[in-house]
Amino acid sequence: MAHLSSIVVGTARQRADRTRPRQPPTAADAALNALPPQEAQHRLDALLAAYPAQAEAAARAYDIARAGPVESLVRILSDAGYVEPARHYARQHPAAWAYRFAYVPTKDRAHARGAHHGAELPYVFDTAGWYLTAEDRRAVDAVHGTWVRFIRTGDPGWPAHAADGEPINEFTRGGSVVGPDALRERLDVVAGAKRK
Image 1 (cartoon, rainbow, N blue to C red):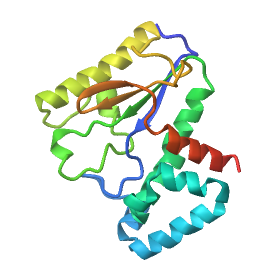
Image 2 (image 1 turned 135 degrees about the vertical axis):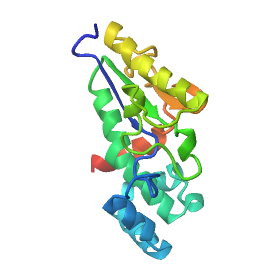
Image 3 (image 1 turned 90 degrees about the horizontal axis):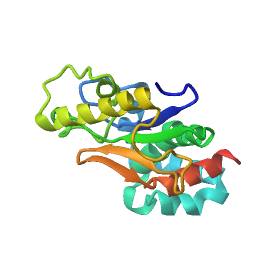
Image 4 (image 1 turned 180 degrees about the horizontal axis):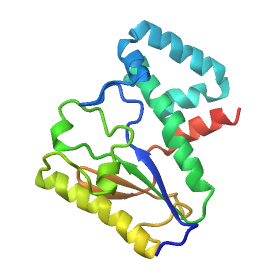
C-alpha cells in the first residue's frame, strides 16, 4: 500500500476553458467567451504592466503575439490558478509524482479546447458513464491502472517529480508521455510573478 506521505498531484491540460462540452459554462467561462479582443488586450496589458519584470518573459513563453489576447489570458489564468499551484505543491514533497491530464473523449473532440477541470476523475475511478470507444476505454484503463498501482505500491510508474528535470506524466490521446514539463517556461513566469 502507498506510503501516506506519497502523493500524485496534477491538473487537466486546459483549465480556464472557453468552452466546456455538455456542461453549463461557469461565470468565468462566460466572461471569457464574451470578452471582445480589444477588452482582452486591455486586460492583458494591465496584467503585464502589474508584473513588469515578467512581461518580456511572458510574451515569449506564452507566444502572445501569435496566440492573441483572449487565448493568452486563458493560458495565463489556467496556469496561475491551477497548473503552477500543482507544480508548486509537487515541489514541496520529495515523494510526489506529477501528471497532466490531456485526454479528451472521442464524443467531445469536436467542441473541447482541452481537458476541463476534473476531466480526469471518471478515468481515475473508472466511472466513465458514457459510450466509450476502444480508444476511450484504453485511456480509462491506463489512468485507472496508474492510480491502482500507486495505491498498491506507492509508485505510479514514472519518476518522482523531484528527479532531474522534474518529470511529468501527460496522459494524452496517444497514451502516457513521461518527460520534462513542456509548460515549464510558462510556469516559471507565473511563479516569478507570484513571488513579486
